[in-house]
Image (tube, rainbow, N blue to C red; front, top):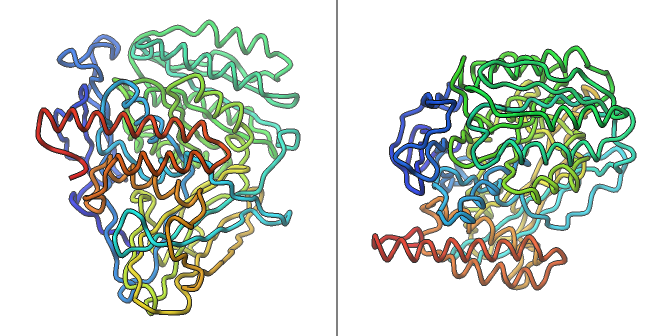
Length: 517
C-alpha cells in the first residue's frame, strides 16, 4: 500500500513556540533537507519569551482506509523508536499539550511492553503474534494487532561494543542543564559496559573535535573524567561533529563487534550544513560498513525532532528522547543489550488482506515508514533494524464483511540476518474464526495497545479519532493497569492521559474547541 495522506498532501515542518504553533513552514518531501532558522548567541535566546522557542516537527499525514479489493497489500519498515512518546510526555509534564505533528502513533505504541514471548528456535530472529477483536473505539470496526518479538541475548553473551559518543556541547545545551543530563546518562551507560568494550568521545560546538581516542573499559576512570569535563560552548556544527565521530569509529572498527556512533544532542544545527541530507551519503556508506548511528535527544526549546529521527533512520540505528534520568536508566541500563546489539537488519512487514473477508483496512501510524508493495522482497530497499529482545507492534483498523469465514490476513516478515547476507522470511495467518467477539474479552495487552494508539490518535487530531474521548482512554488504561504485571509505566500513562484531558478542558474553556470533538 502506498499510503495516501489525509489532511496535508505534502510533508511540512511545524515550528512551535511555547505551547502554540506560531507558523507553518513549507517543506519538501522527507528525502529533502530540513533547515532550522539560525539562532543568536549560540542558540540560547528565546523567541517572544516563549517557554519552548524553536521546536521542529514534520507532518507525515494520517493513513486513510484502503479498500482491500483495490489494494490488498500493506507494507512498511519496522520501527522500534520511542522518541515521540517521551518527547510528548515531556510536553505534558511541563503543562503543555504536544504539537500534533510531534505525535507518531507507532512510537507511542512501541514504548510499552506487551509480554510477547521470544522465539524458541535458536535460528529464529522473530516470533510473530496476531490478535484481533472488535474495536472499542471505532463502531463497527475490528482491530488487528501484529506483534513481533526479537530473539533475546543475555547481557553476558552480547558482542563487545566499540562505541563513539558524539556529544553536542553547543550553547543551547546549557539550557535546562541538558548537557548535565547527557553526562549523567552516559555515566549510566559506561557503568554497564564490560571487558572488551571500548569508548571514544567527540564533541561539537562551533567546531567539532576529538576529545578521547577509543579506550578499553579498563580505562573507565579516564572515560568518566572526559565526560565530566564537558562544558557548553559556542554555536552548533553538527555536521562536522558527526563526521569526526565517524572517522574515529572507522579507525577503531573491529570486525565481529558492535560498532556504533551515539549522537547526544538537541538536534539544533546552525553552523555548516544543517539538514540530514548534508551527510546522507556518509551515513549510508557507514551503515553499509556496519557502523550504525543512533540518536538520543535532550532538551525542550531549540529541539529538532526531524533531524534526530531522520539521522537515526538513515544510520540504521534507533531514535530515543531522554527527558529524565529515569528514562536514561531505562534506555542505557534496563534495555542496554537491545539498544546495542542488532539481531535483524532491513526488517519489513507486509500484510496481505483477504478482500473476501476484509472490506477495508487502515494502518495506525508508520506513515513515514511506508514501503512500496513491490519492494517488500527488494533487498536493496532499506528496512528497520531490530535489537535483541526488542518488540514491534502494529495495529490495523478493519472493516469486515458480515458473516464471512476464512483467512483475514497473512502477515509476512522479511529481514536480513544481523551477521551475514542471508535473507529470511516468516509468515503467519489469522482467520475470521480467530477474531474475538468482544473487546472486553481480548487480552489485557491487546487492550493496552489499542488504548495507547487511540490516545495518540486523539493527540494528533486524527480524523479517524473524532468522537473518541480522553476520559474513555484514561478509564481503559486504568483497567489495563489492574490486569497487567508492569503497572508503573501504565500508571504513568493514566496520569498523562489525565493531564491531556485537563489541558484540553482548559483549552475548550478559553477557545471553545477540542481535539476530541
